[in-house]
Amino acid sequence: MVTAATHSEDASMPVSEREDADVPESMPQRDMRSMLGGSCTDCGTRYSAREAVVSIFLGLKNAPRCLPCASRRLERDASELQADLVTHFARRECYLRAWQEAEQIDRADGSAPTMGVATNPVNRIVDVGEPSASAEWDAGDMACGELVLGLRMRMEKLPAGAIIRVTATDTAAPEDLPSWCRLCGHTLVAMNHPTYWIRRKGS
Image 1 (cartoon, rainbow, N blue to C red):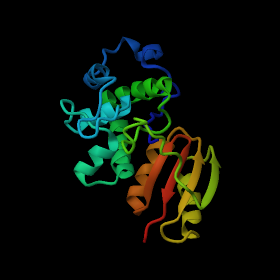
Image 2: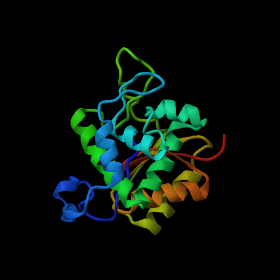
Image 3: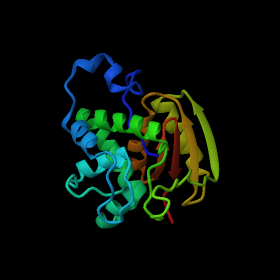
Image 4: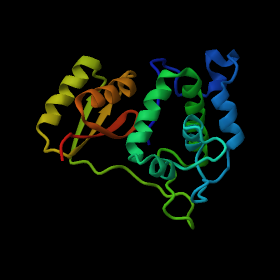
């Protein structure tokens, strides 16, 4: 599952327990809470709290959709759409707070780390699992410059289209790795900090 994070150490802490708990809730947070437990307008599958946040940002609050249905409507790859949205959320405090709260709700609901996928209406939520990787690299706590340098060197050894599973515990990785992928033309297939699945560019 794709997640957003900040540089602060308390990013994973519930919003109500953080030092900024006296900050009024954001509009996306309020909207997300009001949408909890709903079903996708297209397929009827129960959408997750994170998919509610995605729907809010896409202007689909009045007709919420699960990620697969939203991506089909936009003619976008679901993983890429999700990555683009989360990158945006990481830069927008109001959406970031809603996304973090939604992650906590989904985790408590048992729908983390992946999002619900509307391919099986009987089971309602299907776990898409981890992407298959042909290489793995544990970067530990390597930071920005070292991290992307080491990653680039490993990516160059992979054939086009291969996926590498990277573990990077640096708190800036959730911003640095997606940006690096976009700049270099690689695809961030999925991320669940500290784990990232990146597909090498090319066919």
